[in-house]
Image (cartoon, rainbow, N blue to C red; front, side, top):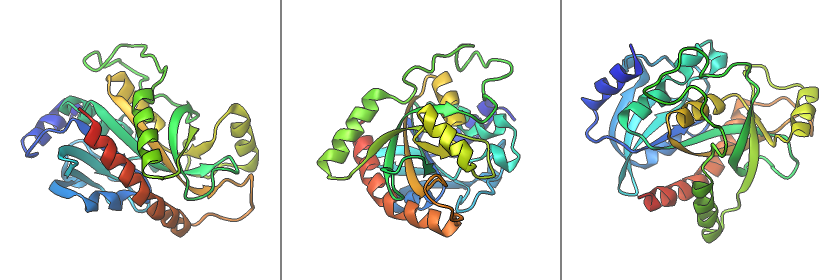
Length: 269
């Protein structure tokens, strides 16, 4: 099943075609339930989609009405660490491109490499370091989507960033900016690795996002991305992280992030 065939399958079932897509990361799936749902399709029913096994990833593709616009939301994503081939990890992003999505909002839960970015912080991603050991564009280039050597300059849209920073300021929601570093996982980073990543200029570490963003930019989709800090890295403590801790911090911050995104979507032309 190709991404085009899957897009055609969805076109027959979606009441409207979206121009905006959102990928909801760990602990953020519940955000989709707060909007008017036009259509919900479990991943298991969608040709070409695999199953997400990550904690708190509900595994539904939802068409919702947000700020008067049809928006396609992924309740959970696919990760390289789950054993999925990279082309499966980014398959939904390519499907969105084939559906005509021109704006992609990516969210994730991340560990902090900076003391100022405490758990619960909302961080707008301004750049990333792909340290996953693989690039999703390796292989035959899909000419219908983009050129062989796409630029990754300003891959996180600066204009979108300015708009969201203005919204955050207006609504008195504290946000930060930072560089996200993607690792393959599933083991968490060692203290030495965290120290190295911080010295490279990374502010956050996680196990997603970079592949989807690379593929989105290859296809000419504009990208806005946020991390919610769910834990400090072991640069600052020696405690084990729990999934409950991650979900708790993500749940609290997601309400504020939702405010920003709802207003941002309202302003999109």
